[in-house]
Image 1 (cartoon, chains in turn orange, blue):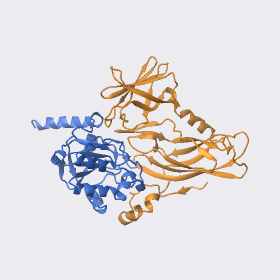
Image 2 (cartoon, one colour; image 1 turned 90 degrees about the horizontal axis):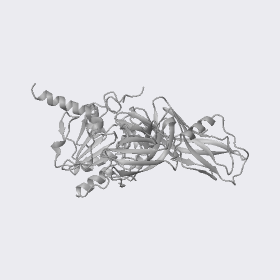
Image 3 (tube, helix red, strand yellow; image 1 turned 45 degrees about the vertical axis):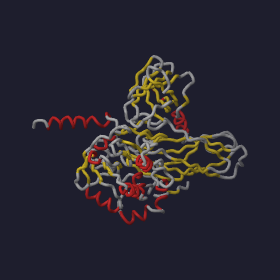
Image 4 (cartoon, helix red, strand yellow; image 1 turned 120 degrees about the vertical axis):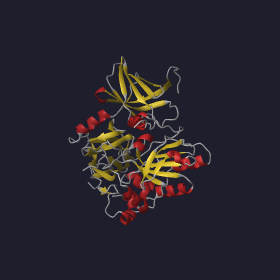
Length: 290
Length: 210
């Protein structure tokens, strides 16, 4: 597997390094990816041991992080930045949208971020064209990934990861090393909320009150907003069970200046059941959309 | 020992309550503050009525801050706007022992080496000023107008990456807010998500990793 490391790459060639050399010969000012594997590793892995023309399969970017370090979800919360992925796929291969498992609240008062610790797999489904030639040795799937890994400090990282894969015909063979990880990760992907669920938001002076009716009483819930600046990420979310679901009080963001029409995000219920919801927002009492 | 202590008590109690309890809203007066700069000079926001004031939260070791300093972008902004009469405060809220904490002397050296030209660098190791404004990241930017009203709260620009190559194509929100406000127009984008590193406040375990 070829791994290209780009240490401080973009800035290095232009202004950064000359300036640094000039000014801070030995200091730790440039915390860019001098070593992309610092505080964790990134791999590109495939669920199947080979690609079969015309049959979709899953690949994933596997981050394994040192204890205490984290990376960020699609909406990183109060600080940070989600990984950015540029696929470099051979002709005839197409990758679907990156799929993000439900995140966790990373609380470091007064701030709260949304992201992942320990290990996370960001998934993508790959579609190899039906007409691909087989048996020609390995082809190489690659991804150019930029991410930020943080503990109390943040390190900007950049790495190109590669995945050599044969193109063959026949029943797909799951890689035993990764079977469990792919299955577990798929189970953590937020599902679209079932059509019979009812999600609504009442707006109060300081809070949004999100009600979700799933049909059964829900003991707890955590909401992760997909839009920025709607709720105060660090504010505690107060959940109360209702007969047919759960009600969650979410503090409005200080930076929210205009009424919003929808609250969109991921709701994580008991047993880590994660769903995508898009709840219309109503003014309290009057029941009119704001 | 008559009135002063009780006022101080009340102030400290209020300050302790600040971190989550107080919201600072664009369109409302910015809270007055008292802060000391790297030369020991004490500044009050109220001293600068009649001038635009920019607050720039800073941590030189944060990659997103580095992006704007090692490219010269922040210095360019500071120079341009202080020349136009804007008061520009760089604020450092890192706790002692946390990333980005600096002594006054060290910071003065940095400012001169980097050819930065803020009006002053305010040292806020206890995080009082940061909490008062609800500052979250470095760089988190605030713009206050001549009447003392907060008119911008958010990111420096619309490219939340640590790469200097993203500066040129970015829309700079602070630049835009100052241009609009000085032309007597309302700020068209008054709030954005402030990107960057979390501020390493005291009491947040913001110590250097071993």
